[in-house]
Length: 289
Image 1 (tube, rainbow, N blue to C red):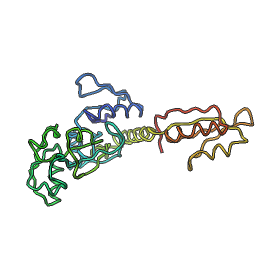
Image 2 (cartoon, rainbow, N blue to C red):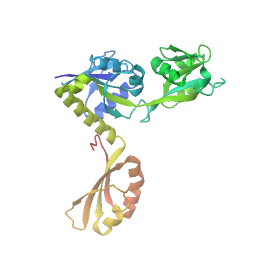
Image 3 (cartoon, rainbow, N blue to C red):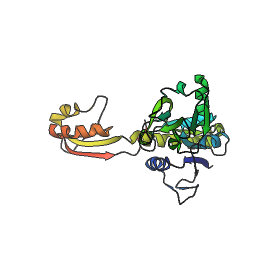
Image 4 (spheres, helix red, strand yellow):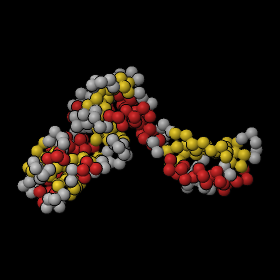
């Protein structure tokens, strides 16, 4: 059994390979190759533009893949969603599909764009959005670089944005948000119905979500004097239950806990001043709930 797995080529490629690396898979792409190497004989990877991924999965050309909810929505693809993976090119925040206009324009809402020309890569999503608003616009497909077309070629654009920096750099402002999007792990209905492929898909889900869970967590080890144990453990955030282990010296106990990276940053000085010693913080690759 081989699972034909689509991986997003382009801006998400590096972040995707990093996520798989934390999940225990090593992907290597050479030059302009669309078929990277992976150290798992059950996976046959292929690099595809995220825009194309939902259609190829729906048609069964590939079994499963990672793509944005925005592109699934734009194409209306009939695929099975395995899980959400909240990562993107720069942050873990969702991207937004927005309507943007030039700062100097008189447009303030999408309804103000009646009869106007709009450029977008999300043609079907844009047409549905304005149809539902009851606003007639002239939406045209753009191959990218939409920002440079306003206002000389078009009146507005529908684009995705993660931080808004590109829009601001082109003197544009957002007037409406159409939807928020995160990366989704999806597969075809046929692949989900195949016991062997489903087993592999489920294994990938566990490992990928485990890697996502671990991305902002750290492990913390320390030695506690029994006399101050309750006081020191009381510094830990609520619902954090440490694992306690006896030490050779009966006056001491070892404690280990998993918590947020920023929590650890604030806690380590407090724990040390309260009497904890041998404090060790270590990174985590996967946390499976």
